[in-house]
Image (cartoon, rainbow, N blue to C red):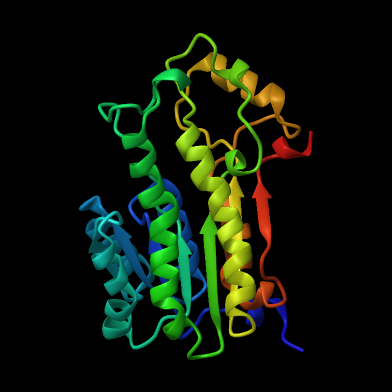
Amino acid sequence: MKNLNELQSLGGRVVLITGGAGYLGQTFARTACTLGASVVLVDIDHRVEDVAAGLSGEFHKPVQGIVADLSRFDDVRKLPSETVRLFGRLDVLVNNAAFAGPPELKGWSVPLEEQGTEAWQASMDVNLIAPFVLTQSAAPHLAAHGSGSVVNISSLYGMVGPDFRIYEGTTMANEAAYNAAKGGVIQLTRYFATAYAPKIRVNCLSPGGILRGQPAPFRTRYEQRTPLGRMATEEDFIGPIAFLISDASQYCTGMNLAVDGGWTAW
């Protein structure tokens, strides 16, 4: 029987993470490096190359940054083969990238009656269709070495509807398109889990609200609404992602792990 350190080790494995320049993407990448993996980070933000270089220097491990637009599906399909070209294999895929919408996008970050189809399409492209395309393209590589694992990142708003009372008096918004896409991610996880079993495990992680300078009224209401009494920090996701990307979760597939301080337990 393997011990915990052996189960969590990613030595010799390669992890591909989308949204690699973001807060969660960097947390996931740092965790994968800590566990011994080589990592490929993908993001539309060119800073992903600097993030990769920094992690490579810190951990003395190969970390590659790739700039890519996940709404360009022909480019998305090339990412797994590019990863294999760089590192010889692909073992873990983390579909983390999320479309949060620029303020200037028509029909985004506005009241429900003003939300439009352009914003819906942009959200679906990155939040739901890209994970489908990328996982589909990665599947042959993930199945090749007996350690294939996919982790999709959803949201508590893929599980429950928003409590609009916590947004009152702020400029913050909650978009139907984001909620619908993240709900789709959870169901896509279940679909892939059964379709790709037993060679590839597919699980989902659904974060709750993460503390990032939100207005004080929102934070207070959110914390009062959360059983653990606070918003999340990036540190709260180190253990869960380590569990899901490693053999510590080797008998888990089709699972959605809510890391939300108990928000969805009410």
